[in-house]
Length: 253
Ligand SMILES: NC(=O)c1ccc[n+]([C@@H]2O[C@H](COP(=O)([O-])OP(=O)(O)OC[C@H]3O[C@@H](n4cnc5c(N)ncnc54)[C@H](OP(=O)(O)O)[C@@H]3O)[C@@H](O)[C@H]2O)c1
Figure 1 (cartoon, helix red, strand yellow):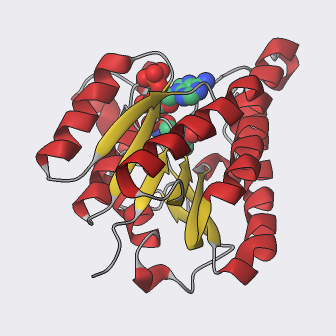
Figure 2: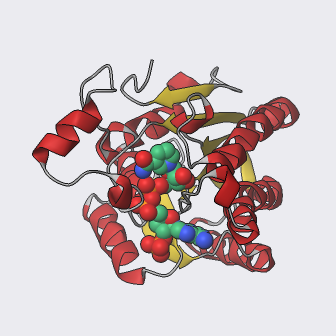
């Protein structure tokens, strides 16, 4: 019998991460998802996954706080040891994140630090420290953004960190490939979540207008994204590594 694989999805409580966690569970994986402050939403996702007959657990994690990463991973490992007999997992999905919007000339230093801590340093360190806990033939998926290919004014601090993560991902692929571990970036285009709602127009007409810059004619939805992450965690994707896969419905091509 094949062993059930385990995915750790950061920010799996809402938006894109929620859909990733659900789609990974649909494919037969057990899930540990993290939230930062909103436990209620995390518990709803856990309940939905358990309703599918899969195991799920929500754990608090602030990926911008490097001091908490080791204790988080110890907690994950102890939980897995207790429930599966092995303290290791198979897939790490670095998804958690927040946005910032300032023209370069008005970007506060604090925003640069925040974007660095959550989108680059946090992802780097959590991945680095996860390496001993990752099973051979595992997968690392880092969530980037369409904003590393096209440039929209106001996103310099955010997109610069995402660009760095794409480089980091190629290095991960190189250094961990000998263990059969793949590393890829998934780069969503503009997708309707709590993260983007403040920047999206309200009303049908405004959303239609926003959708006109997409080849497929509309703004993305979380359910457009999660399946790609889940697919990368299947055996069919074992030969895909060091890639940036844009999932944007052809935004600004
Ligand atoms: N939506 C888009 O258009 C879009 C496009 C390209 C890339 N992305 C990327 O996709 C990822 C998810 O975005 P989303 O749209 O799904 O956002 P979202 O709906 O706002 O959800 C964000 C998730 O990240 C968690 N989170 C926030 N700050 C955190 C922190 N400091 N430490 C740990 N977890 C934290 C949240 O937990 P709580 O609920 O507890 O706050 C929540 O689970 C981000 O990396 C974002 O950059 C999004």
